[in-house]
Image (tube, rainbow, N blue to C red):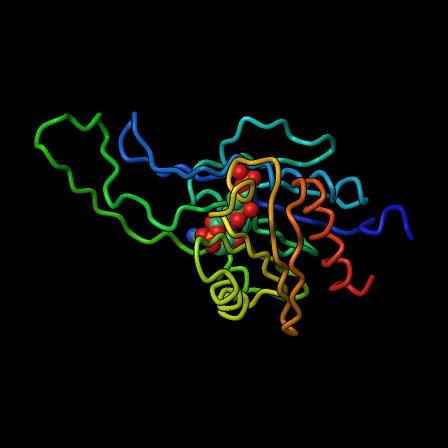
Amino acid sequence: EIKEPFKGKRVLVTAGPTREELDPVRYFTNHSSGKMGYAIASAAKKLGADVTLVTGPTSLQVPEGVFVENVTSAKEMYDKTLSHYSQQDVVIKCAAVADYTPVTVHANKFKKKNDTWTIELKKTDDILQALGERKEHQILVGFAAETEDLETYAKDKLARKNLDMVVGNDVSKEGSGFGSDTNEIVMIKRDGSMKPLPILSKEKAAREILNEVLELMGR
Ligand code: PMT
């Protein structure tokens, strides 16, 4: 086995949540801690890759030797990820990107008035979709975080977004998904092959994901 199988390869990982601003004091976000994405970035670095980590706000320390791009919103993550795309050999989209963002961002703090408050949201641009459409030589890996029908939704994302592999993540299971130190994933490739894994530390899950990527690269 080669010690640094990713030597000379560029790997971009996205991690963490995004924040969608509503006014100067409020935003929409989700429970992503960044642990899974950072574990992938760290493992890829150890395996010899040149790693770029595009990360939303987290409390984690950037793994040593990893180039980091800090972003806040889905729009910023879109722009930064796309700007690095052509130079990458592998892109792994682990971030939990907001699907919707407020139509209006209030310049001043929104004052309390009525008993109910309706906020209008619009769809964000799908980063993975954009990467799939612009794919040339890159290996593109997406995640699918689901609470039901994991396999169906994961396979749908694989095909629709032109991915090489999708990592399905049942986020309703105890010790799996958002925030935990462990994850239970299933990897599905374009040839239809499926690799379900037991619950593993996010570090071990990261290694499994990268092993499959190496196989896709023919290494
Ligand atoms: O960060 P942790 O606390 O360690 O948790 C890990 C995790 C649960 C966040 C991670 O394992 C995971 O499942 N990440 C994907 C979360 C997600 O947003 O899944 P999704 O099914 O909503 O999105 C599918 C894919 O589309 C993802 O690769 C996502 O990055 C991408 N996407 C989504 C919306 C958007 N506007 N652009 C995107 O690229």
